[in-house]
Image (cartoon, rainbow, N blue to C red):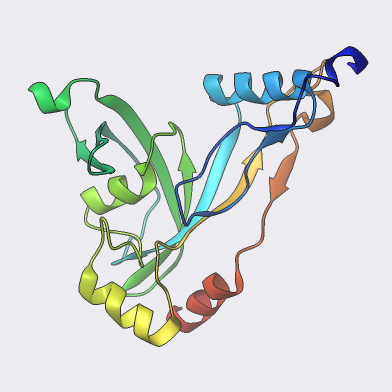
Length: 198
């Protein structure tokens, strides 16, 4: 609304982990920001990522667990079952779905749908099942990452927010986005790794 313009500033409504590329949702009006924030909170916007992980994942899967963040170390821990103890206070349930796009014996190109959205979720969740993201020195394999760093210049996790799908909206600020998908192309580095590894 015009009356909101003097005080409203366009704002970012979601965040990405550091060194993760791709789509960030922003509201350019107060109503738009409120709509996006509500959709993110209610998990009605579907968010998809592209990554390459170590090892072969040959089938689509849905994985769940519990995540707790150590703020001092900026690191999360994953458990498949609810865990007890002081270090697990405030643990959050997590849900990640992945689909392989291309597979070799050593690597898998994945599309990942983030059902819940917790810090480091994709990185830590895939590492917890034995398939860390390439380039991820926090949760991944140093030996694998060192090889890819030397060959391709990869210095951080290869994770890209590639697609967002908006829910149905019959009216209001979400109507122009109803059932629409937005895409962000992968970086040249991502495409170079994809071409070289598959």
